[in-house]
Image (tube, rainbow, N blue to C red; front, side, top):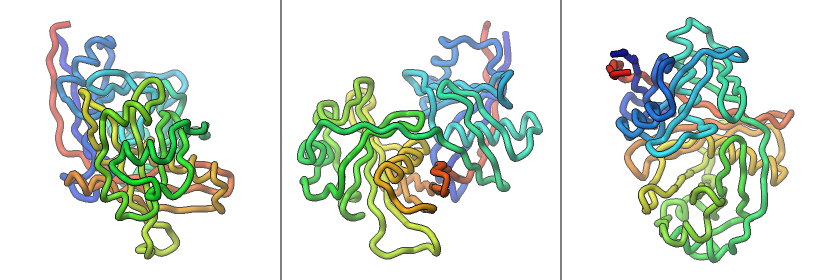
Length: 287
């Protein structure tokens, strides 16, 4: 029998029960991929992570959803960094080795920031009408050209004309599979900036991320990879630099998240959010 210690956290959280939940196993040594996948299904959170030693970074991290392993995801990166700092006394500047590469992460108290990979973009073949129909909207709700963007996890990024259109999204799973699929998964990230700025020296925006789970569309509370991809979208559309954005996500499903995006003059993409630990436990397995 072997004991494996885990922590439960909320990421992009402004309150203890807000944010996007995450389970982090402090030391995955001794677990194979089948065990990690089974544990991720057992927790049934959007992601569960496992920490291992690394020869090239502060720690190596494996990320599992209940059904598959991910190359990169934002809220698992920030939440896992929080646990690595606590368990390894690693300080406020660390790096995490993932399938997508080594990701630098830094902290100011409990607000963590990751530096995303440079973005890759490609054009969308679906029409505005096709994408709008998949979202339960009309074509003129789309405010610009959608793009596939990849800073570690490719997603469809769709600009909408106003936050009211973001609120009205009612995705159709069948149409998402047809028009919002990249060959591996169907997903779509929508965003619109506020008509009136709420923050000094920053843009404010409402965002939502939809993906397919068990044949139906579901909504993610807070999506750090998509926040990074929004940064890639803004760079691809030649926005003036530097930029700071405050993003609201998760309010529509009563799990409010607050994500902070910055783009510097060197075109680097940074994603930030607060991490709050909720509890700890131990799993005993007959290995």
